[in-house]
Image (cartoon, rainbow, N blue to C red; front, side, top):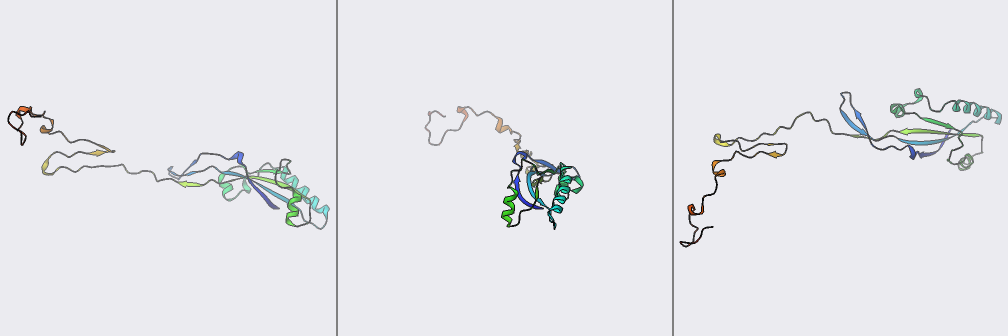
Length: 192
């Protein structure tokens, strides 16, 4: 069995992200969707007589065409963790990989009877860690004014609350006649 062609199955490329949770139900990562690849193998049989090679290939072909996918118990590692189907296509007419004769000539070997096997397998997406969940609330305190005066003000969630207005701050301006004269102003000049 010789792996000679790997191509991404662009039609099965997904978008978006999935969420990964820990045992407590907290979001710990975001995972990109798996990417699918087509792996093309050249399956051959080696024996002393061509008849034996053909018989072996016949048995392999019979076993492979009985399955459209690899059985789940045979999957290991990340393929098993993903829980996705790994499809099989045996000796398919739609195989667009290089021809067996081209593979044999590239290998510099004698051409032998063989069959093509295409496996469509997912490659796990990339996990990107998220920030840990917020476990404490935001507390903002203001400092009390010295000498028992009223609080200066508080700030919560980015908004300031103003100080209590003092009587001087709320009084209306004095009339112009009650104001002291400007320095350098002559008697009888208008006050602004």
